[in-house]
Length: 102
Image (cartoon, rainbow, N blue to C red; front, side):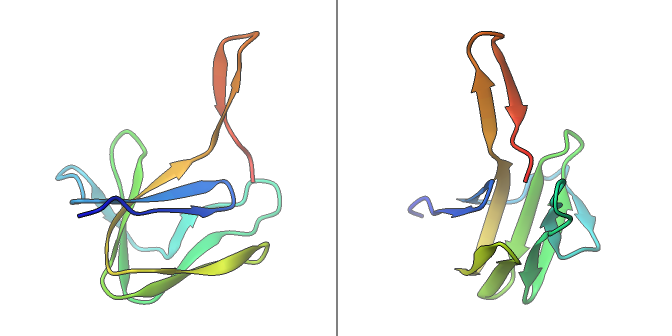
């Protein structure tokens, strides 16, 4: 499988080979919450969202589906397994990385 990466606002959606065994299925279509605006990144189509004990978010697209957010273009996501990575901002002066707030 050739790696597949998609950007959606402050998210990087990366295709993976499988969902980790310790991931817990969630009953939601939201893969990221908009902390500032309240606008969520939402999956539309047959899918399953998972979260690992260390709070990583994965999802299975059981068919081709769309990823929607009011402030970003709708993206088409192919059938497969994906990891959701939140953008990080690094401050070299304080040597800290923080999650970008959408």
